[in-house]
Length: 143
Image (cartoon, rainbow, N blue to C red; front, top):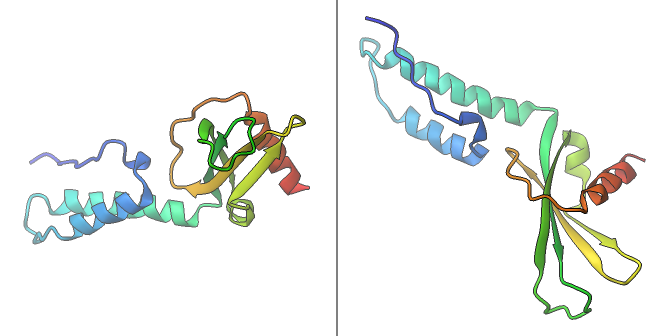
């Protein structure tokens, strides 16, 4: 019999929590050594564990910056609008020390509020003309 391969398309694009749930489900499959799918399932478990391990031990992580703006009014109940989503790959030690929130003030009194979080995978960027603010913020952290 030819070798059987079990692949999950886009495995690297799954969130870490989803990979852990997937691994738990694959671990529930009970096969004996003589089963045809024993080796393919064993390989699949290995691939999932390897991806989870790479993420946990990686020195580089993805950081998501979400920019929001409430307009020119100082009204705290004004609706916030998302202007952009930026991703940067940074050293884990730098990313873990970052604040979760950053506020960029303009000369006219308006602000761009950046929410910062470490994510498992890079998502879709929503371009904005304010991406240089993220670069300035990171540059100031390193100084």
